[in-house]
Length: 271
Image (cartoon, rainbow, N blue to C red):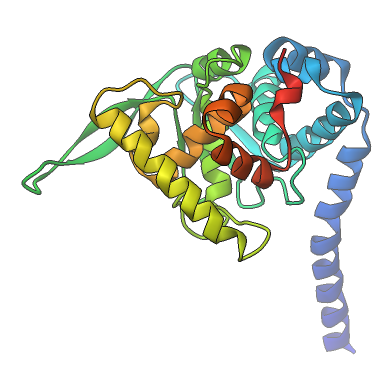
């Protein structure tokens, strides 16, 4: 009888462990979206003000899930508050607003600094010598379930949603890129056949940006995107959401690929 009791208790514990997180999520999602959260979105995320009601409601649902599932951690003396959570969650969820995917399933922690922070870097010179040091960063995306952000840079990027520079969009684009198993500028696409055209367009656009950066030519996308294909995807994402009409005019094939991937046309949110 005793082994049976232990077995039953063990099965019950396993069942509760499986059931409880889902219950807590459903309960959180059933709550009304707080009015103060919406005021934060209106103040800090301009696209929200211009969205149709159905997109606003969808974004609210995604934000509720994001805030429920992710842990925000203040660094450098920063105390996390609702403005930080909702602003960051709003920008992150904008990227998955119409994508049939989980809300960054692998992401667990968002570390937030009050301003730019110093991160260790390695530099390879032309002779192959490697040197170590530190560089100032406004954000980083890691493959172990962590994103690191500067709150000051987040605010600057989200409130000015027309200059093509947005650290939140950039770092969360890296998280989407990582869903394929490697951060290489080729995120998970709907069909295997879609990768051929994706590679053609992105390779050519990346080479063009590399040449623009090398010769100091002005370009729509930030030259930081010429660092490698992963950075190009993140920079292209910033431009796609913040300067969609200009990208559609100057880089129509790239715009189309990103529109296919994100399954949305951000031009409808811009004046």
